[in-house]
Amino acid sequence: MELRLLKELVKKGESQHLEFKLKSSHPEKIVREIVAFANTHGGKLMVGVGDDMRIKGLKDIAEDEFILFRAIEKLIFPKLEYQSERVAIGSDMEVLVIHVPKSPDKPHYVVDATGERKAYVRVADKSIQASREMKEIMRRGRHGQDVRFQYGEKEKKLMELLDSKQSVTVDLFATFAGIPRRMASNTLVVMVLARVLEVHPREMLDQFTMAMLPGR
View (cartoon, rainbow, N blue to C red):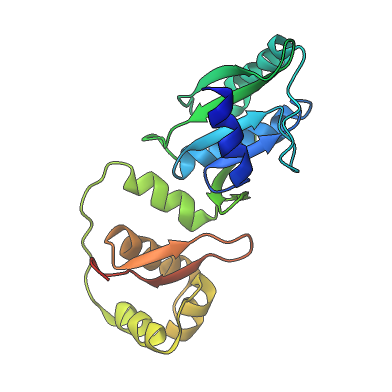
């Protein structure tokens, strides 16, 4: 990547596909961003750029690479593909750019010191923890197979609810339909995979809406 292109990208600010980190001093936080990119639509992570969009660079970039690459290898499961490059911004300063493609093997997880696994997805310019539903959608949707479902009583209740609400949550649907939460969750997951619904991840509660028809 040329310095000119790097500056153009930085001017646009952080987004669904771009994240800035000034240093690699907290690699466990950086791997969350990498996992979120892989679990969503891919993106670029730039180390040596501040949140204020100032390009400060790294003086000893080899040390930062070592710290980050070791964290990626140790803390992410399953392993994911990525590429890295150095962009010189001065005689002794460089920016580390990590390119993360959308992964065919999602969901990927960050594994902490206790062995607990947490998945993350990218929403606008933030990386948030993936809900149970999002993880299931990623897991069951990675093979790209068509999903069919039977239009029964609970699906009818869901359509009734969506006629009166722009979006629904798992809990709202479960209460309205009078069904267990897990059944409501599975119904929404299946209908997302069948492209009847769209899911919108949120930090608190995911929102589900009717899918947009092609051409609209």
